[in-house]
Amino acid sequence: CIKNVPPSYTELKLKAHLISKSLEPLTITDCKVLRTKDGISRKLAFVGFKDVNMANHAIQFFDKSFAATSRLDVSAAFSKVGNAEYRPWSKHSKGSSKYDSLHKKEDGDNNEDYKMKDAVEEKEEIDEKLERKKKEFVDVIMGGKKSTSNLFWANDDGMGDAKITTKEPAQSVEHAKKSTKEPAQAVEHNQ
Image (cartoon, rainbow, N blue to C red; front, side, top):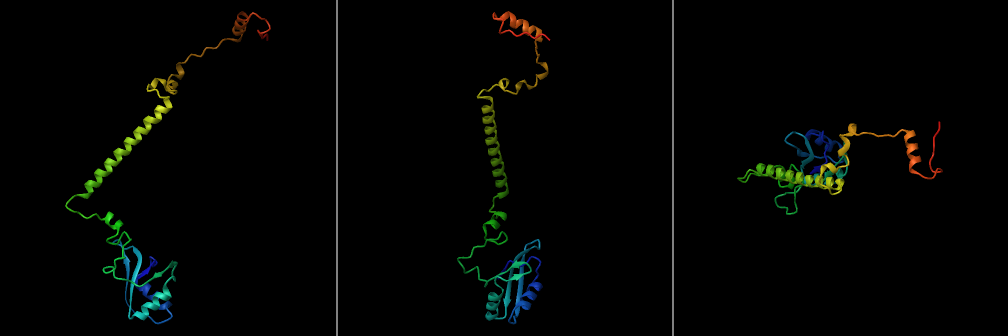
């Protein structure tokens, strides 16, 4: 079993690489590079040798070696049927949790409908939480008051209607004279 095979490698390229780089002559009986349904390499290959000695030499020589820019991981293949420790990990391997989630088996029920219902319920729950958070935020901004007329931005619409009253400087000086008894406090501006 050879892991991390360069994606561009075909069976012929892999055979050529193994035979040309080996210090001892190798006789390869079969070679299979695994691919997805779309034809994309899974970067995994199985290679069969004429005898066990050749296989052991290939494992020792090619393990942690490089092919193109990929570091190969070479090990002896094992039967997954009799091995209790075997657990598939790839989304392409049957029996892995990722494969099961991607390819739900039909058990007489329509799992797609359940998925859609769960998705809709989850979205409604999220929308409800969001709405509660918005209300809480607005209550904090308004200072706990529920009326929209008390919002500090409520007067933004009537900015043009506000009357600006200004007193002329002469009137304000005269008003200051009348309101104070002490002449030192009143300031006259004669300009």
